[in-house]
Length: 159
Image 1: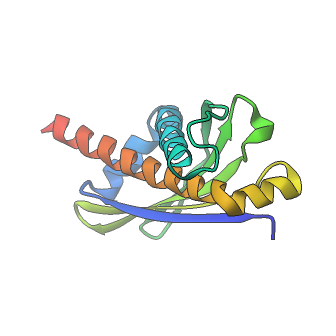
Image 2: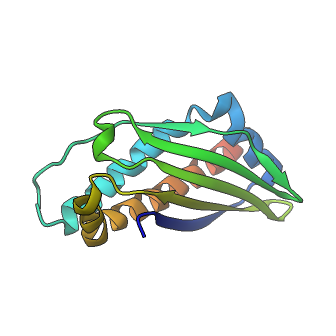
């Protein structure tokens, strides 16, 4: 199987309606900054556990494309495409769905379900199994944590 799957979730103490409006604000252009910061955290993991120690690999900037949201009952699904803009052949393109689900009036669950194909053929698949998948998981976790922090900070600023 060449396609790798990622799944993570987080909770934010903000209404689902407010979360949706904030995420879709400006067509989600601001999400690229969160994704780039999340990849930096993934690079930190690579430096801690990777076989190359402190030898830096290529850094990258990221573009996040936000697709048209879909609504299913109370859940909103926002399609995302997460793509490296520098050295794109060395980094996978991740397609993901960000699910925004209300748990109560002021508590929302954010779930990210992503998939990607490791680049560089068989060598890339082997590297992914050894290390890169953990970096991808750390990046997704960091992305959700930063999204929660940003959404929470926005609500505090409104008070």
